[in-house]
Amino acid sequence: MLSSELATLAGVTVRTLRHYHQIGLLAEPPRSAGGYRHYDVGHLVRLLRITRLTALGVPLSGISAVLDDPAAAERLLDELDREATAEIERLTARRDSIAVLRRTGSPPDLPPELAAFRSAPEPELPASVARYEHEQLLLVGHLLGEAGHAELVDLLSSGASAAAPLVARFYALDTDTSEDEVATLVVPVVSSSGV
Image 1 (cartoon, rainbow, N blue to C red):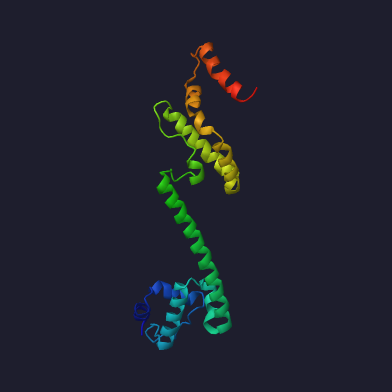
Image 2: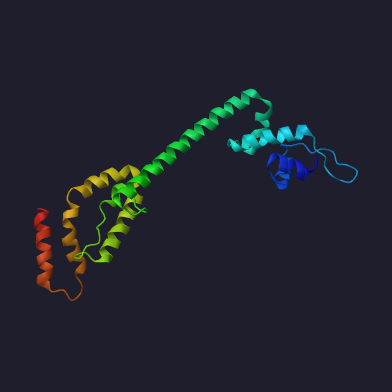
């Protein structure tokens, strides 16, 4: 059979067939007087074996050893199983995170445990403040890493959400704000910190 016929029977492209020749996975058959490669059933069988192994996730570099060594095949299956298990765990964790984001309505760019501490859009809180808090949570969450998220959650849980109206008042300050208004904000903060 010709290259195109072999490729069609095996469900691969002629380009893939040529690549397998180049890397030594599939021996090239002798050419006819007209310059055409003529493949036999043995080529088809080997190509089907290669296709099956690649479908299992075997890298091309490891296929030669597996095709001819049952012990190598067993070791490879063990490794493929470990990799598949790890991938399933990663995907399960990702799905769990997606479920939390959907359930809480959290933005997907924040870790779910930190997203709960961003300010929701409220009339007394400017949008710029909510955006700033979101960006700060993103930066702090990244810098702390997942291991530090629990400590940050504990810190934020200690009453930071009750301070949202006060934070909004601070963000409303500008160069035209009177000293008296600044004093009304500073005194409660100093008093609550015990200073």
